[in-house]
Length: 320
Ligand code: NDP
Image (cartoon, rainbow, N blue to C red; front, side, top):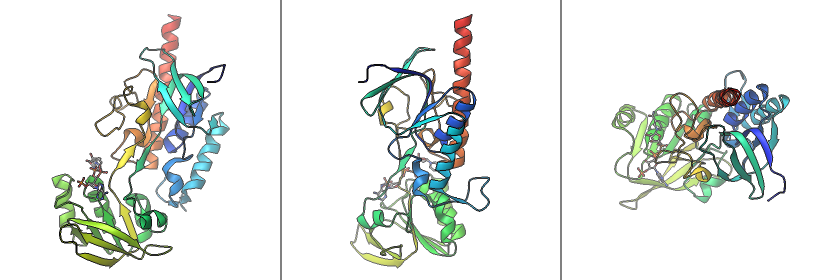
C-alpha cells in the first residue's frame, strides 16, 4: 500500500459511455472526478466497428474513435483519467461516510462518492472459429451491427428474450434468420416466443448448437449439430449473432451492493442510487434490458447529478 491516501470527491469506475458521461457532468459540477478505466479502456464500444445509432453522428462513427472523443470531452472539463483496475472496495453505510477503494491491489483512494459504470460483458460460445471472426461477422449485438447485414442471411444463437428480440429485429432487415436454440424450448417469455414463431423469415432450430463458424477472414457459413440426433448441417450465412446473455461486471461489489439474482446492481426507483449512500450505478451494470450506448450515457448523466445532489445535501447537513 502507498503511504499517503488520496481523498477525492468523486470516483468513477469504468470508462464506457456511462462512465465518460458521468465524468463530463461531474467535472462541470466541479466534483474533480477521477476515473479508473478498467482493463478494457473505452468499454464494449471499442470492440464495435461502426456506431450508427448514437444521435448526433449523421455519418456514424467508429466505436474506438467515439470513446477517444468522449475521453477528450471529459478531460476538457478536468476529469483525470487513469489506467487502472479497481480490485476491491470497502463502501461506507453512513450518509457522508468515506468509501475506500483499492486500485491494482496497491493504491488506496478514499472517495466521498463513487459512480459504478463497470458495464457488462457479452458471453460468447468459446469456439476458436467464433473468437477469430469477432469483428468479421460474429457480433454480440444485433441492434449495433444488424444493419450491416441488410438483405443477407444471418443466424442467431440463444433462446432467451434477447435472442428472440434480436431475431425479430434482424428479420426486419435481413433476408433470413436461422435461430439456434440448444434445448427443445426457449427460455424467452411466451409473448416473445409467439412473436418469433409468427415471423416467416425466422427459421427456429431446436436442440441445435454451433459446431463451427465457417470462413477465414469473414463469416461465410455455419456448421450446426443437432444435439439429440448428432446430425450436422452447413448453412451459408454472412453474420452470426451470439445472444446467450451478458455478465455484469460486479464481482468486486458482491456482499456490499444490492444486486438481483443475475448480478445486476439494483438502483432505487428512477434514480441511480444504490443501497449505499453516496454510491451510484449507471450503464449496463444496472441495465439488462436496453443496453445501448445512448441509454448508458443517459444514466451516466443521472449518476453525476445524483452524486452532486448527494454531496450538496451532506454539506447542508454538516452546516446545519
Ligand atoms: P438469458 O440468460 O435469459 O438467456 C440466455 C439464452 O442463451 C438461453 O436460451 C440459454 O439457453 C442460451 N444459452 C446460454 N449459454 C448458451 C450456450 N453456450 N450455447 C447455446 N445457448 C446458450 O439471457 P438474455 O440476454 O436473453 O436475457 C437476460 C435477462 O434480460 C432476462 O431476464 C430477460 O428476460 C431480460 N430481457 C428482457 C427483455 C424485455 O423484457 N424486453 C429484453 C431482453 C432481455 P438455456 O435456456 O438452455 O439456458
